[in-house]
Image (cartoon, rainbow, N blue to C red):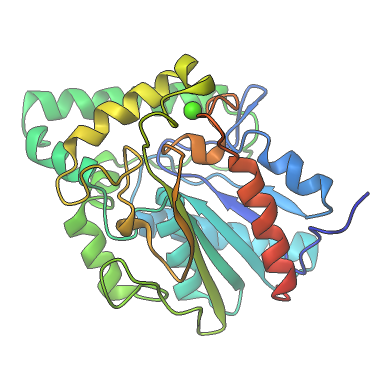
Length: 296
Ligand code: CA
C-alpha cells in the first residue's frame, strides 16, 4: 500500500450539524475516508451530538481524542471538521493544544452562517413556525440515530436552541471571543499559520451557476436546497455555498475559498453527485499530503 498520505498523526474527521459516521452502509465522508486510507493515512471518523452547541460537541470530541490517543498510541491528532465540525475542532484545540497538531476547517462557519441568522429572524423559537422547525430537526436526528451504524457509545444529548445559537453570526462572535485561535484579524484575510503549536487551515466553496448546478448535481436535491438557502444571504450574497459565506469560512492558512462546491459537495455528497469539474476528494488527498509535508 502507498504511504504517501501516511501522516505522522491520525486524521480525525468531525461532522457538522446533523452529522453522522455511517447511516446503515452510507458514510458521511463519502469516498473520502477510503481515498485517504488508500494513501496510508490512519483515518477516524467520529460522532458528536448532531444537534448541540459547539462547546458541548467540543467536550465530546476531547473525550474521543483522549480515547484515540490511548488506542493508537499517537500523542496528537489532526482534526478536520466540516461545517459546525470546524467550530467543534477549534474548541478542542483551544482547550488541549497539546493533543491537537492541526485544525482544518472545511466550509466552516467561522464567523457564523447567514442562513442561521435568517432562521433566527424568521423562525424564532417562541413562534409556532420555530417550534415546528425544532420538532422537525429533532425527528430527523432521532431517525438518523436509529440508522447510525458507525458510532458505538453513550446516547448523545440534543439541544436544538443551543445548536442554532452556535451557528448565528452573533453566537459565533461570542464563541470567537473565547476561542480566537487561527482567526483572521481582518474580514476576508487569512489567520495565523500556527497558534499554541497547532496549525490552522481552511477551505470552502461557493455556488457558481453553470458549474455547481450542472453535471451530476442535476440529480442531487441537496444542491437545490443550497440554491434556495443562498437567497437568505445578504452580506455575502452571491459568495456562499448555500449555508456558509466565502469569507466567513476563513481560518488560518486559506487553501482556497472559491472551489465550485456547495455545502454538501465539499464532503462529496450526496453519493458523489457534485457539479461539473468538481473534485472534492482530491482536496482531502492533497491536504493529507500537505500535513505530511508539514511533519504532522
Ligand atoms: Ca452534490
